[in-house]
Length: 306
Image 1 (cartoon, rainbow, N blue to C red):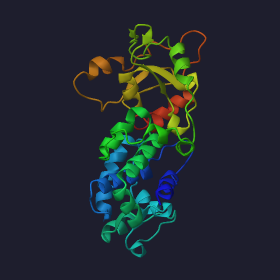
Image 2: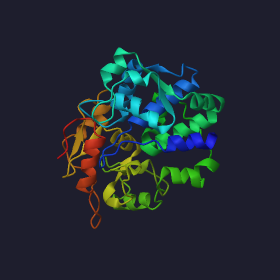
Image 3: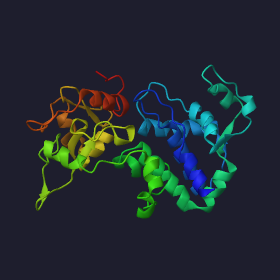
Image 4: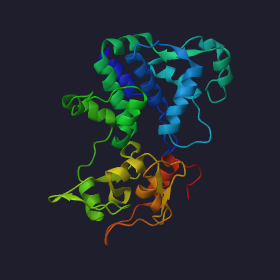
């Protein structure tokens, strides 16, 4: 049952349309696993799912005018890990999804299947292994602990090296990371943060400078310099969180919802200005296609897609 259950979560049928992100099912599964680990009831009302999954999607999903929580709640039944009580009381629309009003009116409940819930409760290590697989497959490393924390799943070294290096784990992740990517990106940017020009070193080793994917590796972004930015660890986190993005001419745009102490000094002062440290001569600039993906699927302001 253990391997079969992990395989079912690895095989979640996630909605696809071009390059658009749809982390709805993975986030719902993570939320349910968190409830399981806390010993909370297996089935819960759609009303609660609607509220809490919508909050997770606002934080970690792409910016959309309308958030649809009813579709993952209903469609994850087909993946063999989720069930809905009294499905006969819910009408299907033309696309095969449920009528949200029916889910509310009849107080429909959903949750992990009995066997999945029981197995994950008996084997919390497996539950955390599944959770880490889901975050690692759908979010960059800068966000993974934050997503686990938001779903109340402790990111406590849950998957050992022997599991993470196994063929099943790598095959499940679908693509290995290219170890040359970091070196190539840092060379292109002179080991400086493209935004703030931080270029600290510890001896001869660049300090807190990272190679960020513009289009995430987890979204099949290529390991190429034109899909990379050298960023300090702070600006890497902010970029992956959607706090700022880049226009085609490499102008920094900061989301107007970013607030708090230190924001102006660390990020706000760069708004509307060109990158301070673009790629050096002979190196490719960020590809406008990958920048457009970031503006559409990660940046926290709607409608900025040119």
